[in-house]
Image (cartoon, one colour):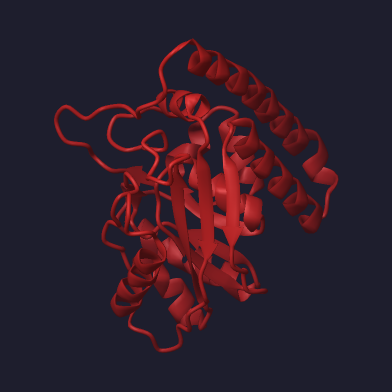
Length: 267
């Protein structure tokens, strides 16, 4: 997914300063790097011999541990419905996918096609049966909708970020409705998920900001240096889609997620 463009003078994520924060960040990044390499080894050597459920168990474990190694506490509220569903979540950080996978490892995310060309990372993303969208091709969205519909018919869980880009976590961006057509055409329930990154005092975490020109390296460093951060995954009730108008559905999902996010210190 795209990241939101920041205005002139945009800042990188704020993080604690001082020797303690630096040492904390270095320690966490060292362990996170080793865990990333471990995950790559699992994908290359073990995944070919595992069942789908066995792979999903490793995805849950790897994602949850990566979040912990970065010093972030994961909180999950609510239950994912069994069977086929389309997950719709607000988008704040690249870490969103790990947060959802730690709670719902069967989720197949729709991602930008450029990820396929990222060294090493592409193997990890492929292992989660990601569906790729070529944003520069106007007609590719239709192809992806058909691929999503087939996955839903097969009983899979598909996940999308309808904002189409990352936000700073203070307000929701407009929801694009195109990809919701896959759920509507197959009559598959849509389950909204509200994501929030908070600091120890409960306010929206600036360290999770991944907008504008912030690089993955800068984001990792800010997250690793942060203290007391919590990522909350709130799973809301599934919504029916049969004969739904996709724009009306998109607005309803946006409203449900907005209502689930605290008004104080953020959305």
